Length: 174
Image (cartoon, helix red, strand yellow):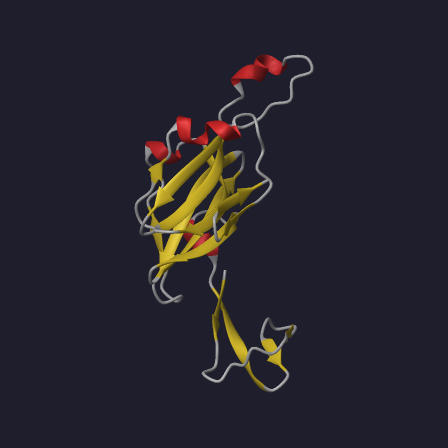
């Protein structure tokens, strides 16, 4: 995770990235980046999948993978410097892999998938392509998350979401 500190007179000119991670502007000062180790929130294998802002809070969704065990990680910050972990050890996050985090009106949408075996491909059924069930959570503040019911995610049954984005008239997933 990198946090940037723009200068007060940062222009909207095209930006080139320096080898140290700073932005080099054609007619102004650069942005300073600070590295924040995600490993402090899990093992040394924490990989971020998305970041979004809700109100004055920045939220990062990630997965902590240690050996063959994967657990969701959500962290938040109001200043980009001090980060805290949001609890994800409840049943709503059991056996889940996080994929996307999107800002939506009134909060955030977190999209992931179940790590439970595909019941339609039990025991390696011949010709069966296992598919993970799509899971979605909603939060109005980045701190508390509600798992959306299966009837809400039913259109994504047996579908793998490659990407999701918010637009002016709703969400687009493909």
